[in-house]
Each structure stands twice: as structure tokens, then as C-alpha cells.
Length: 120
Image 1 (cartoon, rainbow, N blue to C red):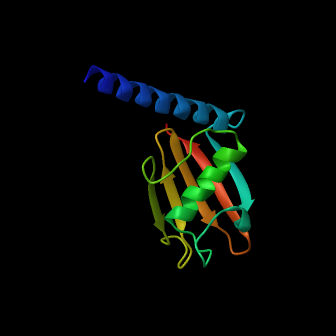
Image 2: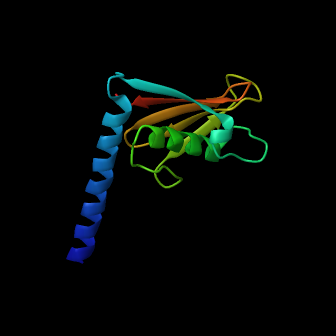
Image 3: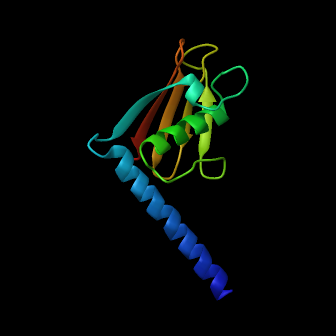
């Protein structure tokens, strides 16, 4: 039982350490947010290239990879909400993590815009 509790505490501290590293890496010299633009073919997506939950997670992971953040996002460590409330038939996704959130959207041409914001 002690081993199980020790293992869980270690994993939690390891996850928090990675979160702190990512927050520092993503925001180095950029204040409270960071933005990148990627070509749609660089982001794994569904067949019709519409923004959805998985494409938003993939885009966030692409940003992490480009900025050397070691965290790999997935359904277990994110909360993703996609909505077309601002633009009909054009989803904008909010990918929430423990160290901040990503706003991800695809423009009408061939780019995916990814903005990371830290939690205040």
C-alpha cells in the first residue's frame, strides 16, 4: 500500500514538473500567451479536415513539439470543447490543460492557428 501511494505521489509530482516546464517553455519571452501558425497538412486530422476535438489536441501537441515541451496531450489530460458559436460551420476549440489552455482554429485557407494562454 505504501508503495502504491509513493508511486502515485511520484507520478503526480512528475506530471506537475512537466507542466511547469511546459508553461515556462511556452511563455519564455512572450508574456501570458504564445501563438504559432501551422499548415493544415502538418496537423493529423480527420478525413474532411474539419476542426474537431482530435485535430485540436493534435495541433496543441504540434505546438508543444515545436517549442520542446515534453508533455503529450490526450483525452486523459485535457478537456476539449469545440464550438461554432462565433462562425457558423467553422469550429474553434478550447483545449484545457493543468498549465493553461490552447485556442485552436483553422482558417479558410490552409492554416491552423494555435494560441497558448497560461492560467491566471
